[in-house]
Image 1 (tube, one colour):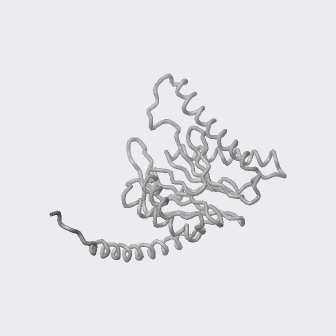
Image 2 (cartoon, rainbow, N blue to C red):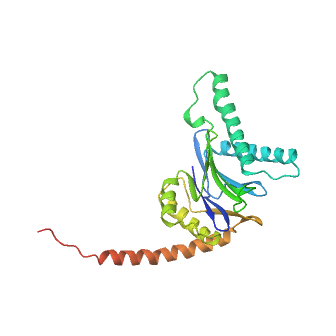
Image 3 (tube, rainbow, N blue to C red):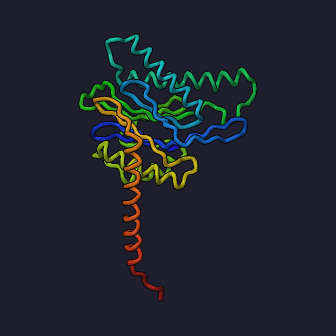
Length: 251
């Protein structure tokens, strides 16, 4: 469980995630509070996954291998969006077949719902497009192998409902990476106050033509403090405005 958000910006793609990771070992629930869930699966593609940790790790490694194999088979080419779509869907369907269908048949018994291979991934990057005016993409890869291409923003994980609501209110198609960093920090911080599976330790990476960049943790922490201070002032203003609203008693 987690909160992961992604945005298409004027100057690139951004993916942000909280740092809470939960693992269950012998019925004991273990929390890791500062886990960076963003993975670089190629020089121009990053991903972050929601679901059981070993499942997310499995599909992430599968994607890395599939992309590396494609590069070896096509040494002088870069994958286009259609190539990536095929790679992503095939990788997820292969694991779904192996761990959900074949394992169930082999064990000849029902598998508990939580044991099913069911990660969801948010993937962003740059690739070759037929439309030369566009070269960045953002998509969700679902556990059944279905891909949903995102034109603006997306959120996955346990905190995705609240995160999507805030993104709908404050995302702009004209947003820049730097402004999206601030928006991501604020949204995940807000979600962490409601969702017990999300914390306010935040990791952010973004992709531009020049490559992948990780926002330093110190910079995120400093921005987070400034945003919290600004929100205190904003909430005070809102409270004063609400208190000034006149009401009329019913006759």
